[in-house]
Amino acid sequence: MGPRREDHTTLDIYTISDGKVIRLTNKLDKIGDKSNLYPLENGSFSYVSTDTASTSPYAHYHLNKKGDSFEIVTEGTTEDTIKNLPQKLDLKQKEWKPTQWYITSPEKQKEVAQKKLDIQAIQNGDYSSLKGTWVDGTGHTFIFDEKGLVDENYEMILSYFKEYKGTLIGKYGPKNLPVGGAAVYIIPGGVLIADDRNSTFVDPIQTDKDRIFAGQQFPRFASEFHYRIDD
Image (cartoon, rainbow, N blue to C red; front, side):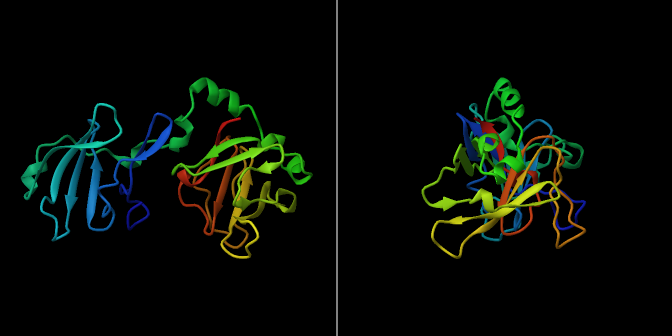
């Protein structure tokens, strides 16, 4: 989102290659600050920078053949460099979905989608409905087995979680440390996440998919949620 709620600005672009999440904008760290990257209707990108230190404030990029890296088509010091490019993509008119939905095959997605969270069973120590691999839009992963979270350094004591409006709410954090944790929300498909401290909060995505959110602030984007990609 841009400085006004109705504006849309590209802050980062990721893709999936060989089952891994790759950040395409890793060499363009000032995007959203002094630089703007605009997706174009033909799948390429225009770049404009107001950084006085930039030697090429205007550029045109496209994806390489594999689709996992940007390549420079042309760059220059004047706006004429990008003058005759295709129209910018209207971001407000597109339906965007979290990238983690596409890590597995469509057949596997359908199989995983049939599994539904049972929050009452989870509170009673039965974690079978939670079992699997869950990934968010940055590639961060939670793995659960029949005993709970599989992690040497972090823990979720799921039997301590409390239910609020259909969501299990608890804590995720380092083992044996009183600080450094985050709130965790385990959200069955079709349930909207709610903030009991802020009645104006709006869930950034409505979906029938089970999901998990972990963070110190409430989510603003769909990509902040973890979705199950494997069992």
